[in-house]
Length: 236
Image 1 (tube, rainbow, N blue to C red):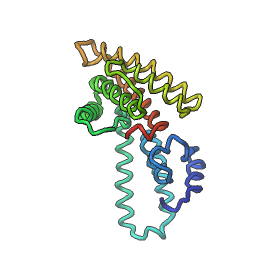
Image 2 (cartoon, rainbow, N blue to C red):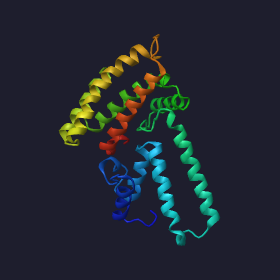
Image 3 (cartoon, one colour):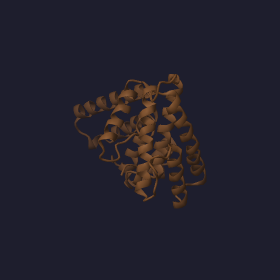
Image 4 (tube, helix red, strand yellow):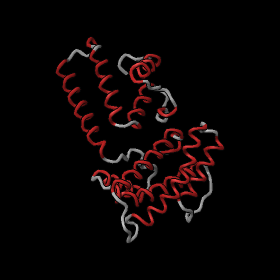
């Protein structure tokens, strides 16, 4: 990756951005520097990613002897900066980056596609019911990956509770992280109520869009955090 070694890429991120690039949060894709940077791009918000990518490009421009075709470099730069601008502009929409296809399942495929359509249209209220169903499947999947028994009749917060207990037993979490993810059980319980009483799941008075956006962002952030500490099983 450019002219960086493992040591110098770590120093670059620390000195320029105050970011520890080799932290566990960015290790779910693999151990190489390029995989850590790709994971960073996946999990961080568009404005942070844009800032880092522009600074990396500036560093690249200082390596002119390695890139001798000015026209080609300018074309790449134009495409990159246009992409970053679009990503930053789209930041006003809810993020759905933690909503992944984690198994070969037609229902899951339709579910994820539906969530993506609603979020792309900036309709978080419509997406909440499907997000709840996704979380039911997701936490059931992660329990299956550990060989932990669960009942399909269990509500979401029960599945999340079993999962949190498993993570704690495995010693995967530091104290602060453990507290954050414990709170997920309470969040999941409240999410059950919102889904049943404030979404299109039934003939309900709908939650207002700004609150729906906040809830969607919070659940997505929780899933993104879980991916960072349990990446090996998150999308398997």
